[in-house]
Every structure is written in structure tokens, then in C-alpha cells.
Length: 619
Ligand code: C2E
Ligand code: MG
Ligand code: MG
Image (cartoon, rainbow, N blue to C red; front, side, top):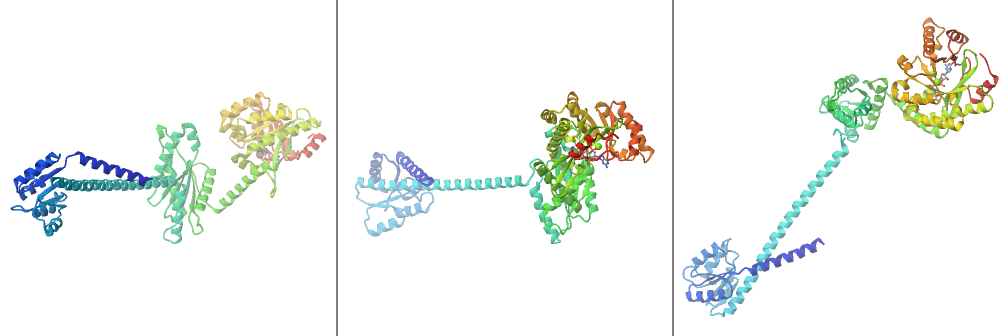
């Protein structure tokens, strides 16, 4: 296709050149030493429409032709001075006149004369006397040949130019493609925000460092996994563009802490990772981590806001046991996770037990996900006893997990993991529905005395979710249980973490007459201001106080203080973990309203709880 097109173009071009040549009159240079001949020939040619120049000797002819090369030369052979052959030889020797076609005119008719004429570069030979028509025919022949050869030359030049242009274009294309490929490669290996190497690129670097360390070409190195503490708060409060600017500034500051042989990469979000080359021991690595945190703690000013940054840092040292860069990264990540758990701005060195724990945790999380589908949860009910009447006034629903391999797993072990993975939402929804249904069933079977309530523990995450109210409404609707029979137990962290949304949920619950208890009081912040703001129905005194109530005066006084605090704020006091008669007696003297604990009954399976209800015990 392309080829045919260029052929057509070439043909058109050649025709154009020919037409141009015909349109302009040919310039004929006539040379003859006989003025009469010269005049006759010139006049005749002029009449035929040619442009005619003339000369009567060889030198004049050469001068004229060199000054302006004619389209054709009619050259007499026999002339005094420079003869025709000599003139021709000189014409052909000059670059200016070399291409001018020369037709000899001569009375000499010897073959050798003609041979010499052609040998010198003549194109034709006319013998005198001639017929003028013959001269014209021969001139026209030569002019046609000349035009053709000129157009061929132009064509060649044009083709060469095209080839040159095309080659240049191809070269540019290749360069552009190379540039694009380089850009793609850069993108594939770099973080677009900070322009730091990304995870893929970092892994390659570490893999190379591992190989070199194995060949003992290089010393040990350390991997430091950094995660900025509370970065989400910065993003949420100042906006993502400020967050982005801060990340760029953090990257730049970290870079200033490095040596040329170290590598800094961004793994995404607020996570950075450093490969610190030539580390001799752990002390060096932890000192470096400390230096990083000191530098990060100096204020940042993204968009004029003053921001302080802390990072949790996980450290791992390369050793001969590592042959996969991924493992180093994973372990540094695990150590970072532990650092975070210890509090902000800390560094933690990896040790293998962390990995085992992380694995267990991962398994637990996976098992939890399956447990929901397989309905492996069940509820136990622990009676809540009125210390005034000694009768059961309610039950606290406590979740249990029947693990297929591990047997019964207690909530303390799986609730935190469920909170983190979000599995708590479905578990919590199930607990709420199951507990409400159970109480309704006891009521229907006539086992539940009037006012018997069920308490359900709500995790922080559940409380923070707006649709938890929708779930509660739906459960009450479905079970037809009176809202007054439902108590929800929350911990102080619910109030501390997001007091505003907690307040809104609180009011909604109040409007429904659902009661609220503050669980584990005394173990957390025990903030009076929160207690004051959030009017609750009951305070649950943590087991740690109850258990030591009879072992020393201080504990007795603390419990006494909590009981009177509850009463001052219009709340009931419920003591958790009553195990002995003496504890019960003490609490009664202190005026504690209710109690729970193994002294009355441990958490019971529904059938056992129903039996207890039937017995109507009185302590
Ligand atoms: P909690 O709400 O403070 O529950 C009381 C815990 O104390 C229960 O532990 C209970 O078995 C235990 N306990 C009660 N009386 C005694 C006693 O006399 N001596 C001793 N040593 N312990 C006693 P459990 O069932 O292991 O639950 C632990 C925690 O797990 C609960 O503390 C609660 O915070 C949480 N939890 C339990 N079920 C759920 C649930 O369905 N949802 C949520 N979000 N959390 C739950
Ligand atoms: Mg509780
Ligand atoms: Mg408790």
C-alpha cells in the first residue's frame, strides 16, 4: 500500500519536472568561427523559439558557458585557437559545465573524428553541410534526454531527502518509545506522591543486599519499618491534601537522616521503610531508630499548619537465615505492630516469638471469620442479684466460642481480634438477637419474674456504628421484647474515643428506655467528667476491687467511694466477681445495690439458667 503510493507520487513528480522544462525555452549556445554559419544557424534556431547565444571562438565559448551553463551547445570542430575538441574537453573537466550536452558540427566526416568527439563527451555529431531540420531533430533529442536526466536527478534528490526524513522520524520514534518505557519503568518502581522507590523496588534492593551479605561482600544491614502514629487523625482533621504534603515532607526529612548507601522507600499510606546499610549490631540500629524519631518529632508545617509526627518503628537485622527479602519486610512489619501496641513513638526489635504470635493471631482471625458462618458461638448467662432482696433481677449474656480444635474459647481472647477485623459487628448482632430471644422465651414460659432484664455487652466499635440503633430496633421488634428489659454494657473507652457520637447514641437509647451500665469501672480512665456528662443507670465495679475487698482497708475504701459516687450521680452500683460470702457481706454493708459472681453462679448454659430461675433462689 505504502509502496504503490510512493510510486504514484514519483511518477507525478517526474511529469511535473518535464512540463516545467518544456515550458521554459531551451538555451542553445552556438559556437562557430564562420560568422555566416553562426548567423544562419542562430536565426533559424531563434525562429524555432529557442533562446540562442553564440560565440566565434573556443575561449569565448568557454567563458560564456561557465558564466551561465546553456541547455545545449552546438560546437564547431575546426576553429582557430581552441578547437571544438579542446573546448569540449575543458567543458567536461569543469564541474559547472560538465553536464552541458555538446553536439559537434563539422565538415570532417571521418569515423575517427566522430569516435574522438564521443570519447571527449560529445553527445552527437552532425556533418556539414546539414539540413536544418536534422539539426533541430538532434537538438530536440538531446534536450529531451537532458530534461529526463535532470528530472531523474531531482527525483533522486527528492527520494534521498524522503529517506533521510523517514530515518530521522524513525529515530525520533525510537527515542520517544525509549523515553516512554523509561517512564513506565519509573512509575512501576516509584511511589507517585513522594517519588521514593516503592515496595517492589525496595524488595529488589534488599534482595541484592541479601545476596551480597551472603557472599560476605557486605556487612549486615537493618530494615526499619516506620508507621506514622495517628496519621488518620491528621488526614481527617486537616484534609487529604495537607496529609499528602506532610507525607512528602516526612519523606524529605527521613532522607536527610540517611547515608548514600541507605535506601528509603514508601510502602503506601503513612508507611515508610529503610534499608540501613553496614550495621554492626542491634544497638546501632536502635540508636538510628531513635534518631529518626527525634528528627520526626521536630514540627512540620504543611500548608502553614504546625504538625507533630511520631512513628512506630519495627527493626529487623539481616542474618544468614534470611534468603527472602519479603521475610525481612514481614518481620519488620510485625515488630512495628508490636512497637505500636507499646505506645506512640516507640521502636521495637523483631524477635521470632512475635512471628509466632502474629501467626496465631492470623489464624484466630481466619477462624473467627469461619466461626460466624458455622455458628460456633453460644451464650452463657450469669445471674445478676439484688443485694437488697437477694433475688435474681437479671442475667448478663456472655458469649462463648466453641472452636472446632481448641474447645471453648473465652471472649477475652477473641473479642479484641474481632474488634480489629470488624467481625465484632456480626458477632455482636447475633449476641443481641440471641439474648433478647432467650429472655422473651423465658418470659413466655413463665420463668422470668417481672422486671427480669438481660444485659448485653457492646464493644466500642459496635457503639460507634450508627446502624447499631437500627439493629437494636429490629431485634426488639422481631423478638417483641420490651426495651425496658434490655440493658447494654459499655466501657469507658466508648465515651473517651468519640464523646460526640456517643452522646447522640445515648440520647437515642434513653428515648427507647433502654438501660445503660458502665462496665469494668475503676480499671480505665474513671473520668468523673464523663460520668457527669453521660447519665447512666448503673456502674459495674470491676472484679479486681471486689476480689480484694476483704484483704485490706484501701480496697474497701475504694469500693465505698465508687458506691457513693454512683448514688450521688443517681446510678446503681453493681459489684462484679463476688466469690465469697464475706465479700457479699462487705458489699451489703457498703450499700452496693447489685452483685454478680461465682458465689451466686458462674455464667450458665441456657438450660441451667432456666433451672435456676425455676428454683427462685434467694441469697
Ligand atoms: P465483663 O462484661 O466484665 O463480664 C464479666 C466477666 O467476669 C465474664 O468473663 C465472667 O465470666 C467473669 N466473671 C463473673 N463472675 C466472676 C467471678 O466470680 N470470678 C471470676 N474470676 N470471673 C467472674 P467472660 O465471660 O470471660 O467475659 C470477659 C469479657 O468479655 C466481658 O467482661 C466482656 O467485656 C467481654 N464479653 C463477653 N461477652 C461479650 C459479648 O457478647 N460482646 C462483647 N462485646 N463483649 C463480651
Ligand atoms: Mg459486662
Ligand atoms: Mg466487667
